[in-house]
Length: 382
Image 1 (tube, rainbow, N blue to C red):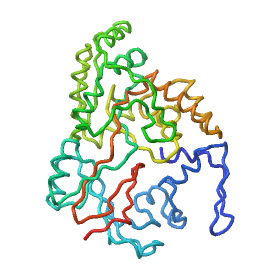
Image 2: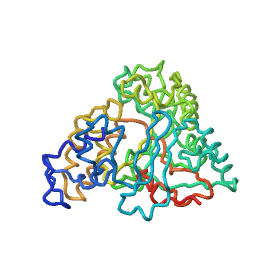
Image 3: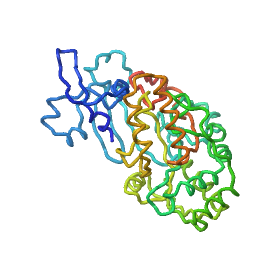
Image 4: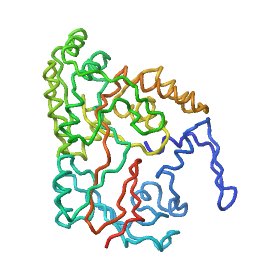
């Protein structure tokens, strides 16, 4: 998945100690943005050659502000300050432990009890309450996050566009956003999030219309549709969304059977196609829309983000947009892609939301940029 954008590299040679010359197999306007991705990090050739790719991935030799001291799978990653980092003198922390705590409420309690200094993914329902705690700070940072309902296009009647359109019309996104995000999110209507390059603000937003949804289902022979809905157990927002969507779909004659699974298992189930519908989210890794467009609509990577969506017109347009150098023409291509994705209901857009994180009062500069990255080298703990 991460290596796919770089498969178009033909050669990469060092012309001198500080210059890398890269030639591509085909033109790619987004390539410069890809080079700003965390996946394009400086690696130790000596260590990679000695250890091999698999061993290196678990024991990386890094060049950033921190090095990997220990990786306890399923528990935590322990980092320590890198004395050879070029700005090591300005790094305040001696180390960082990224601890895996999948249950939302447990994670918040650990911060309040001073067992954790910071935590990510603050439940929407806890924001106002936690703001009253004088020992913690709530951060709401601008994001590129979009939550959406994935649909497995290869499962029976879900292959029919009118069935997917009916599901879209059966879900009241505004009430869902109000109930789940407590007003902190906004209704999504495009796979390219608001604030991102080439976002189309006038994209189609299907109205909440259960009566019309019933008609579409009946015309498609899907009056008694039954769906397997995979839900991430312990994720408060996912569980709330599931209950609301299950109830709303029931009003148009669709039965959604909720299958709660551990978050460590759900991703593989989606990859393997062992689901009908499931909520997932995406945050952009680069500024250019090509990366998300390729993964979501381009057909050749990760089964179009596990949806198995196929449209040859869309596939061709994704490829054309990647090499179009004229910004105005390129923007129109992405506008058309947003229209086509919504027309086909590749998935159901639900909502956009900020990154909501928490830190103890004695921690400063704990920020997450819109692409989801943390600059831990700037964090200070007093």
